[in-house]
Image (cartoon, rainbow, N blue to C red; front, side, top):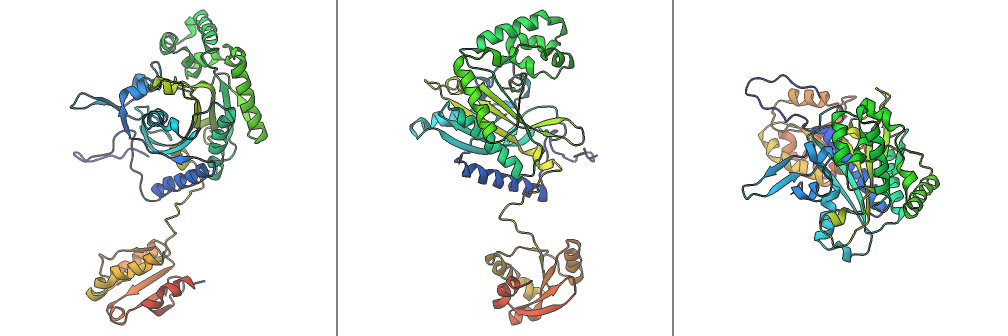
Length: 430
């Protein structure tokens, strides 16, 4: 959305944030309903965590050396001295909730979905905002490879039902603590040999989080990464078996995938499987990540659990989907297409108007109206502008006789209908 020129003193929304209005609001809601419906079919249950968490929930889990913690989190200090943060992603808060509420005592794994805004002080660009919406699915309490496949399949299905085509999955395994150390040693050695090629930010990452260099967008680093050591060649037998099984599940479900040796994802808590589902941007020809996630078996312990808690999750970026030309413009179930415009004339009719609207509501018939207006011509003009197929005209005479005039806006035919018969009449319309 282009920046508007505003008058001096006029307020506008915060940079990178925007108002979601009318049809776009319904499209967000429609996507959520579809995603929720599919998630429930696969066994997920809802959870909603606070938008604000203790800052440590994210700094201890996402990790130093990540863009989110280093420069993108919105943080605040309360009057009481607490350090809080607007959530930059859902997963850490969900794991915090799992531990806090003793969900370990429930039958495992616990499968949860969440939907809502997240906040990052990122550079705003097409489809990327500083307040944006994610649909998140997490399976907590098991290390089985089939669960990695399950979250991929569920996200894939949601995207397909939302209208996506030509999707592709990038996948990699970055191992666990048993085998990753040797890989990182070789990776660091490779980068040190090519230190002159690295930009300042990537040299800094070499000290704090070497894996993040693989995710670099610096042109020279991208070229350098083509010959970087591969994590899958360093996998221990258990991680190799796990990754092989995930790929076999994808093949069985006929989900196409590419092993991307540079894929590490931007968060430090990932272990083993990391994935991204990509969608081609028809305008630029470039592939855009709309879904990402992976396994995070050590996150629970980082958040205070005495034992490690195996888990895997995936997040879908809703903003890019709703704004994409291929989006199916999903409509929420509670919103039906409005075909009828309600017009009232005179004080007696206005007095009873809300009762007539209530009759229609109970019959699940949505209407448009401008009951604050008094002029017939003005109300008819609005009905025509909105492209209404029918109008209900409720005047002084109709108010006395408990009836309405039902008009077809296409052929201008009309009929008087008793209020007691109105719902039946509407439902019998061809």
